[in-house]
Image (cartoon, rainbow, N blue to C red; front, top):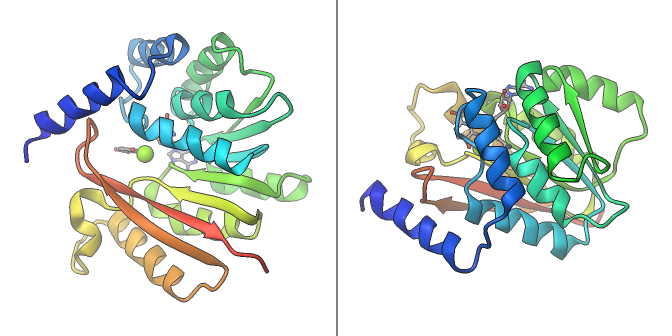
Length: 223
Ligand code: SAH
Ligand code: DHB
Ligand code: MG
């Protein structure tokens, strides 16, 4: 299968079941103009995140990795008026681009960006009465995905979801000898979850404009 076909199908999906959204187009354009990498979730993946927000009746969302605010805007738009989303971003210059796009999209009242390495921000969040979350989307530095997952698991309500992006990594997930630390981290996460009674999880492989990857979806079981 060719990458061009994956992209073509994503475009078709974008012309049919996934509606175009002006604010999201603007967010992508602003990120591009500011020189941010184009690694936001694809429109079909973003729509799936929105469907999850709605299915969960989510009111509290935590996101690791803001970039230009694309996925944050998507999820915030699916939240009710009194919902809120905290998104963590290491780079102040990315957070600034995101802040402006979030403002333009009209969801600034529901979105809070916390700037700094997530591991440090988590220490701060621990001192505050944040959570429990209905949905956690992990999409920052991939080597720390297992750590973020463990933190999130203690702070996601039963029946809530934890989703981790970029776990399949062109199929290297299945390669025990792969030397990439980010890949090893996803393998470790999967192995840990095999013995974690608090979640029921699956990983869905994906193709599309972002090539071959996939995300892990974990439902937090009742205590
Ligand atoms: N969720 C975004 C894409 C995120 S890309 C979307 O779909 O629109 C990954 C982001 O994680 C980048 O912006 C990167 O700067 C950020 N990041 C990397 N390491 C981080 C860390 N330690 N803490 C917080 N954010 C980090
Ligand atoms: C990268 C990060 C992502 O979150 C993603 O979905 C794709 C690529 C990256 O850092 O290269
Ligand atoms: Mg990602």
